Image 1: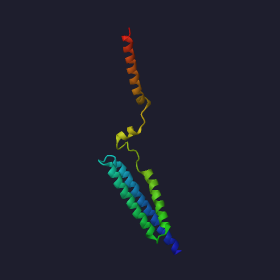
Image 2: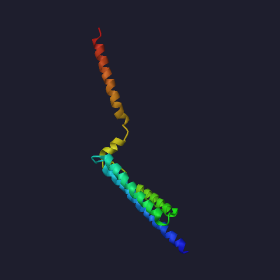
Image 3: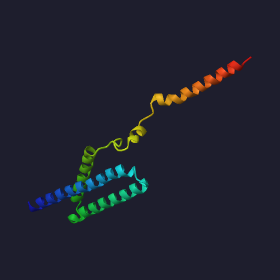
Image 4: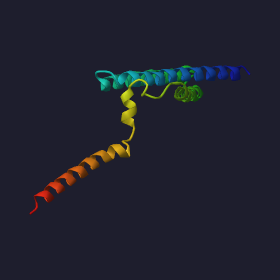
Length: 139
């Protein structure tokens, strides 16, 4: 009975640690995307953030693996907590970037038929004008 309660405590601790690692990873990703879009060097911002977030998560999972003598159960609990953190992050964190950057909404939209047709209309008008000028010069 003591072994079962000890294992349950370790799994609960691993689940909480996995959720904390997921919150750090996905919260950092959310923060990076929001701030990296307006940075002077966005590529450097995204790469450094990715390396830092992955490093923290790898160290955390390594700690979970070594927590109970290289047993896989705490690692499984940590991965489950990480997945739960991802699911909650996608539900809780705001997604639309158009509230931060108004141009993001327009750049993500497809051009309407009216906008696509303006070039064609201009080209047709230019052809008509050229056609009428040629017809008026005909003998």
